[in-house]
Each structure stands twice: as structure tokens, then as C-alpha cells.
Image (cartoon, rainbow, N blue to C red; front, side):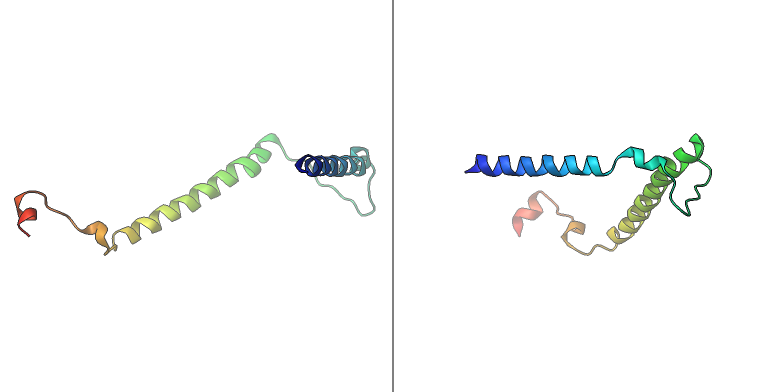
Length: 94
């Protein structure tokens, strides 16, 4: 029973992938559409800055803010993590 379901799912996935590949032919990208007005291309430096450096910088800023805000809340912790326990003879007398 499981083989039939796996075969059916595989056939469906393969058929869907094949149809998507056939429908989105890259040759259609060569024909211009009405009103299509592409701008100038990006240089290598602009591409790296936009798609690599900018996301890394945003990640660093967000991570920094999370770290700063979480450290400020850790100082106000009034739970048992701030209690110091003394070991030795005084602890056994209680």
C-alpha cells in the first residue's frame, strides 16, 4: 500500500515539475512585452552590495539589538538564578 502511494506521489511531483519546466521556457524572455523598459544593469560591486553586504549588515544590526536588549533584561532577573548557595558546615546545620 505504501509503495503505491509513494509511486503516485513521485509521478505527480515529476509531472508537475515537467509541466513547470515546459511552461516557463527561457526563450520567452527574449521577446519584449509592450511597455517593457528595462534599466541599466548592475555592476558587480552593486550586485554584491545589494544582495550580500546589505543582508549581512541588516542581520548584524538585528543580532546586535537582540543581544543588547537581552543583556539589559538579564540584570533585572529576580529568580532563583541570582541566589548564591553556600556549601560547607553552615548548610548542614539548617
